[in-house]
Amino acid sequence: MKIKRLIFGIIVIVSLIVIIINKNSFLKSENKTDVLIGNSNLNKEEIVEENINSENIIKENEKIDFLQNLSKPVYKKDEKDIKIPIIIYHAFSTPELEGDIYKLFSTQERFEENIITLLNDGYTFITLEDLYKYNNNEIGLPEKVCIITMDDGWLGCYTEAFPVLEKYNVPATIFIVSNLVGTDGYFSWDQAKQMYDSGFVKLHIHGKSHIEYSSVSKEKLISDYTSAHKELEEKMGESIQKIMAYPSGKYTENSKQWLKEAGFEIQVLTKYGTVNKSRTLDLTELGRIRGEQASRKSIIKYYKKCRSLRAEYIKFKILKFIR
Image (cartoon, rainbow, N blue to C red):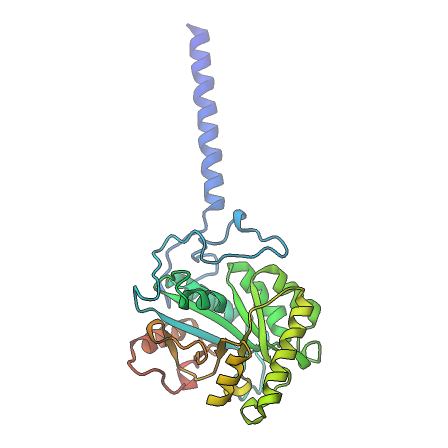
């Protein structure tokens, strides 16, 4: 009888130890917390991290499908009208750059807050390549999607924005000016390759030089973009879909048609304040929303305002984004 009691006691103790270990392990791995958008006490530990876990460690050169294994419903283009905001950033500087009269700079902290806010408001981050497939009815998209873009190829995209993208498993597109790569203030080809190989950064062309391509000849327009794209493919070591953005957002109906004929079926403009609509989607005329000065509260507030407007786009007012 004593032996049976002893055995029973050992079993109880072992069971308690197992329960305690499992509980601690669960607490350490649990990262999901419901967060109220705009809460000033939001802390970086309290974010939705459904895509951040040990199973999502990305190997070099591995292609990531950011729409794989989604827990939310997706819709084909003819099934539901989806609003598709595309955010534009330029440069990043921490601490915040003084004298930034054109408001081109964001900080790493502000950029991270933007990402956290959008994740917790239910947004799924997609790429322009995903948008192309969606427009061709090859894939469906969730109701709330967002695309991150960055123009020019500033060094801060590598030193400050790229770590945030990796941290939250979020894709972004950087439009580079090929002649600026590796010059003062801009990331190098080696740094570009590192970001590209991570799977979190798509690289596309912003021009061979940062000029107004709306005023150049057809020959120069096509030559600059095709040669810059070819150089990008050579540096990255593989074929890349032809996607471009206009410097300063300047374009003409002719330039759109000429570049489309040259294979650039996706053309990103400026048209600040535009939230693109799936049922009237024109891939050669994608508008964007500025994000450099967007605070945690204003970025969602402004998106929702844009989504409610009937017009194709509204004039961007930078005061909407100032804290």
